[in-house]
Length: 56
Image (cartoon, rainbow, N blue to C red; front, side, top):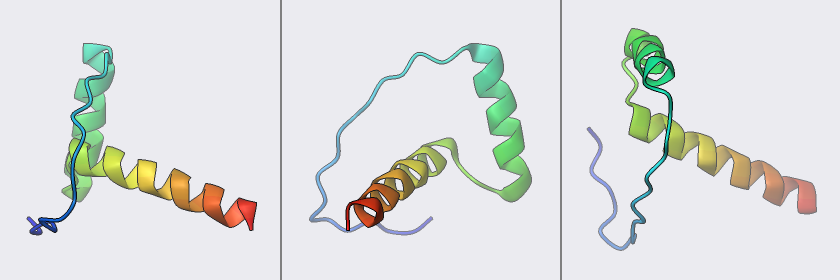
């Protein structure tokens, strides 16, 4: 697991997700060795970056 920068502040987020969907999602990510938390974080980063590109 990569070590994260100590200068970054984090926000804890609580989401309500159906148990069956979450379980299936974890199974899919396990095939590639991904972790739910990192996958969601990367998705959020991608959305923000794409928005920034669209504003230019």
